[in-house]
Structure formats: structure tokens, C-alpha cells
Amino acid sequence: MALSGMTGFARVEDASGDWSWAVEARSVNGRNLEVRFKGPPGFDALERVTREAGQARFQRGQVSLTLQARRAEISGAAVQVNLAQLEQYLSVLAPLIAAGRLDPPTADGVLALRGVVENAEPTDDADLRAAVEASMIASLERALDRLKTARLAEGASLSPVLDGLVDRIEALVRQASEQALEQPAVIRDRFARRLAELVGEAAPVDRILQEAAVMAVKADVQEELDRLSGHVTAARLLLTGDGAAGRRLDFLIQEFMREANTLCSKSATSALTATGLELKATIEQFREQVQNVE
Image 1 (cartoon, rainbow, N blue to C red):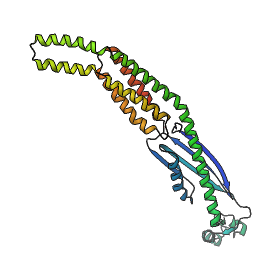
Image 2 (cartoon, rainbow, N blue to C red):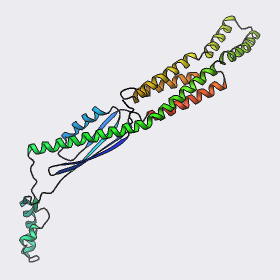
Image 3 (cartoon, one colour):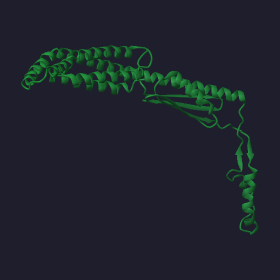
């Protein structure tokens, strides 16, 4: 399975009967998966279907779907008179007419008043309504499929960037391994000087052994280098493996940084320290890019 990003956009337009609609699907980065739906009144049942469809396709990111629908005006549609609204108008006009301040209203004048004549809302046949909702669901699913394609395209553009950063981390680990070969000699010289100081102070044997043990531990960075090499291998497997890799890469980066910090703290040479700091900077760049990975 190809690497997937979390940013994308898709739009689908469709129609059924006298209904037409447009679906827009957007996705941005998110630590977890959140699917949101906004639709027209009367189509609340589509929200559950949309959430389930999004959860079936994605594992991370904030996914928003908007369904905008309109119904065409039907030529020759039935009209009705709002008698309650008409009576309200007449009751307001009656005193003015009685006082001679207004002429009696004409039928066409009264019917032209706002809210008196209304188009009768067409009633949906149950089968027709079900067909419209089914078509809308199909449009929502197509929009999600196109959004997934857009996210995969982002993943394809991210893949060489992430591979390049892993290559850089691997090269720095290899460089650190070569520089670590100088550690024992440097630590040995330091210990010789420290031993001379301790002997001059008539330090007890156990103090001298303690100093030697501390320096010996600090000189050995092979365990950290081995772990870093193992993390490089794990990162490559995640970037080329199946399934969403973002969350697992997040955890792996924490392990990368932990070993790099320990390497820097154990460094006894300026060269190894510089490599360790560059390694940490590269791991941080890798972390920033992984935030875009599903």
C-alpha cells in the first residue's frame, strides 16, 4: 500500500429527480480521525452513513464533508392561500377602511401581499425519497474515494522527502560510528590525567575504580549506535509497508531522539558531538514531515 498524506480536496456534483446537489470533501492533518458532516435539513440520516464511510477509508486526519442540495421549482406546482395570514392583513386594514383612509382592497392586491399565496410543498413519495438519498450516499462515497486519491497523491510527494531524511539519518549514524572509534583513546587520556590527580590526593582505591567505571561507560556508545541503525531499518519498513504508518512513525521518532540524546551526552569529542547535534536536527525534520502522514 502506498504512503498516504492527510491533506486533500474533492468535489462531486449529481442529481436525481427534481433534486440536485454538490458534495465537497476536505481533509487536513489530525492526530486522530475525525469525520464531520454538514447537510441540508431533512437529510440527517446521511450523517451516520458518512461517518461510517469515512472511518472505512481513513485512519487519521480531520475529514469534513458538506452536502449542498436544492430542489427545482416545479412548473405548474399547486398553490395555496394562507387564510390565517390573509385574515391578519384584513383585520389590520379594516379600521383604516372604515375611517375612509383607505379604499377597500382588491382581490389581486390582497393576494399580492407577502405570505398570502404560497406554493404548496410537494410531498415526496417514500420510494422517490429513498432513491434520492441513495444517490446522495453514492455521491458522498465518490467524494471520499476522490479524497483518498488526493491524499495518496500527497503521500507520493512526501515519500521521496521522507526517504531522503532517513538516508541522511543513516549516513550520520555511520559517521558517528567512525567517530566513536576515537572515544576510548580520548577517555583513556582523560582517565590518566584524572588518576594522577586522584593519586596526588591519596584517593582510596574504590574512588579510583568508580571514576574508571564512569569513564568506561561514557566511552561505550555502541549500544546507542546499534539501536539507531535498527530504527533506520524499522523506518524504511514502515514507509514501504501496508497500512497507515503515521502513528507508528511518531513513536519511532521518539526512540530515535532518545538514542541521539544519549549519544550526545556520552560524546567525548567535539566531532562526535557535532554529528550528534546534526543527527538530532535531522530527526526533528523527519518528525515535522511525518505529521503529514496518515
